[in-house]
Length: 241
Image 1 (tube, rainbow, N blue to C red):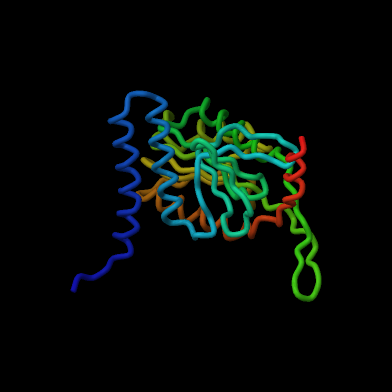
Image 2: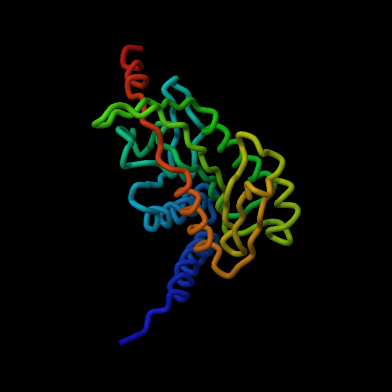
C-alpha cells in the first residue's frame, strides 16, 4: 500500500496551477482569450478548495442604491446566506452584502496592473451595503457590523526583478485606502499580504506559491466572519422604478 505524503500533495496542487497558467500563457495569443483563461484557472482553484459556503465567479457587484462596480475577474461571495444572485446571458451580478473578496487576475504583474486592480477593488468597497438585525428564538441580535472586503491580485509572472521586491512594494503602497490590495499571488515566485500589525506588505518567496496563497486566503476568510443579513426590501424598491 503506497504511503501518503502531505508535502507532495501540497506541492502537486501548486504545480497544477502553475502548469495551467503557463499553458495559457504559451497557447493563447489573443489578450482577451488569455485573460479569460487565466481567470478560469484561479476560479477553478477557489471553487475546488474553498469551503462550500463560499463561491467564486467573474461578476459585477451591485448595491441597493443601484450602483455597480467595474467587472471583477474573481469574486468570492457567500452562497449559504445570500438570498439572490442574478445571472443573465452568462453575466453574473452579486449584491454587495454577499461579497467576501475580489481579485484582479492577469498573466503578469506590473505597475499599471497594480493600479488597475486597486481601482477595481475600490469600485466594490465604495458600494453601499445594508445590514439588518437578526431575529432568533429569544429575540433579535443587533445588526452585524460590515465585514472588510478582501482585495487582491493574482498573476503568473512579474515584470519586476526581483519579482517580489521594492518596485512591487512601491506600487502596492501607492493606495492603502479603498483600493488596498490585501493579498496576492505571483504563481511563479511567491505570494504577498498586507501585515496589519506591522502596517506594511510582507513578500514571501517560496516553492509552492499557489498553495501558500490559498492557505493564507482561507485564514483571512476565517477571521472575516459571516456576511451581514441583507435588506432584501432595499433591493425590492427597484421593482417599481
